[in-house]
Amino acid sequence: MSDAIIEVENLTIGFGEGKNRIAAVKGVDFTVTEGENFGLVGESGCGKSTILRALAGLNEDWSGRIRLCGRDMDKKRPRALRRLAQMVFQDPFGSLHPKHTVDRILSEPLEIHGMDDVEGRVRLALDQVQLEPVHRFRYPHQMSGGQRQRVAIARALILQPKVILLDEPTSALDVSIQAEVLNLLQDLGQQMGLTYVLVSHDLGVVAHMCRRLAIMRQGEIVETAMAEELERGKLVHPYSRQLLVASRGYDRNAIDAFLDH
Image (cartoon, rainbow, N blue to C red; front, side, top):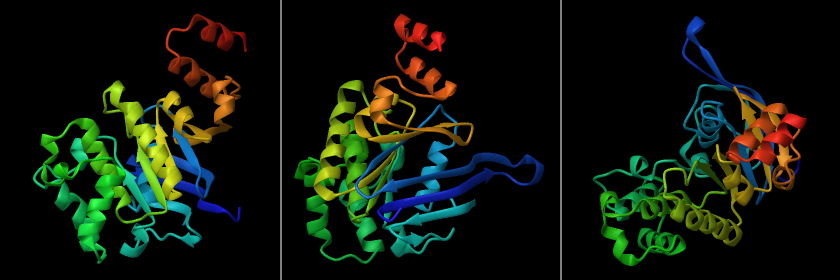
């Protein structure tokens, strides 16, 4: 696929050694085109976040092939290539250093990567995520959950990556704030030409954000579908349909439709 910005082939990831080794991801294949929002969906422990960490260069214990922006990734990734894909984690409080101000949280990656105009880049990043200048010298505990997640998004954006990896980016937030953050991500994606890979157990969040999604179970992709197929309930694999019913809660019509298949 010539316009693919992410190519994953036979990706296998395990934890542990010898007979205690557990296969978390088992021979996964997928591609994501430039500018696309792609979702990875499944229940907790299915391997979706583990895939993100390998894409980000945070997990080196994998086999197969990972290709980003036309370049094959080694298990040990040079600093320059780490800029290609940046990650936003599930828990904004846990992912931000509690003793660092927002200014230091944002400026530190720039200094590590030797980028110029730190002052201007920090100001721009705060503006992009719609935070006021007053937030710049606050600590994470002085901010709301939604504001902290905006800082985490700013930190991911500040290195000008091509790909943003979103690991359940709204699940730790109040429902009232979730839509704001998702809409912000969509706006930023369009403005900056970003490619997103979104991991979630929430089919509603994925349908809102993504054009295409892969459904995972026990380390494997069981089905790839378009968002329109998800919305119409036109999923093929029994597990995918079961997941769809669960996402709708106690909906008698949805349950009857599932049982009729």
